[in-house]
Length: 387
Image (cartoon, rainbow, N blue to C red; front, side):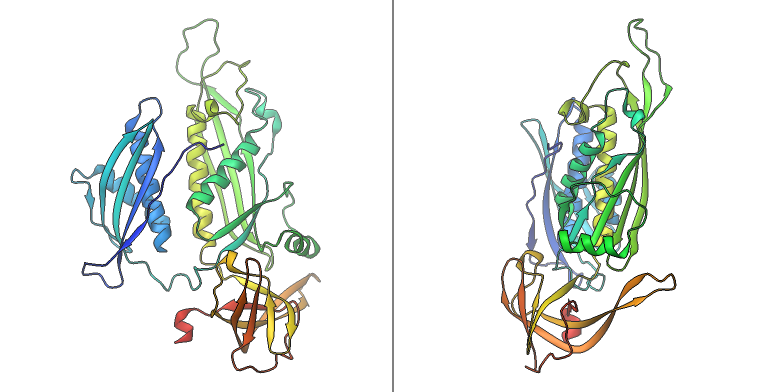
């Protein structure tokens, strides 16, 4: 199910401006034109074009709304901004087959110190969303709203994210905290270090709004949508990001109308559009929280002066990449729970063989890796560390 289509063309052009280490990026966003509302479609297409350009360049996406709003209110369609983004310009706008296409060009110079190893993608496990109070879904029979929200959220994250490889878990994880054994099982069975959990805390109907003069129809009522989201590092047992999102819109149906959240009809309602914007914002926030996390490769085999890593080209590793070995040891915390402790070593290895899922890395000095054990880890050395 695809609710909004985006077509992206990104081009890093040669720099012809006064800002050091900047590049021009061109991006085209495409949004559905619904009910003739060209202003809303133009805003959506512009917003996503800006977001795509920022994500592609490595800049912060927190400036998306500011840049978008500025562009849409500038008569010259040209905006001077501060920080990482300069000289943002709407190049063209076209309407075709029920879609609006907006192309923007931005002069971007991201802070490269912000993220050390952006080239590597993180394995992100997504727990299916669930409705906390299912009786709230009775009106409209919205029992599949959690499943549909999960699908749309993943779609939005895939469109915006350059940092993660997404894997949907078969069942929702509802417990507040996971035990050491549960966290280990998730990593072994699904290969992900990062876990996203979400629940729909409120999908209830509120007070009646407006005036409905049709005696055979129910009065319009406000309907809420509350999303609680948590992103955590299950290996280090820490929360990276936690946020509650809330919105509401008019529910313009009578009490007996059944409308499936898995249909286009639902997502074209005011309520569906409001939910879509929340999920889009949540996906951007998750990308922002995850993108600068340091990715670790686990060592699965040791052979004299080389080690086998559980990351490969799929995650972005390349031949010649250099990594630092980290020793992993277990200890008990103050509550008696087992925890992992990582210690940075002086050992450096270089990728010499590579496939989609794994990589062989040899000691740079061809020294024996006698102290390295299966279960230890390695992390990419960025360019500044190598200099």
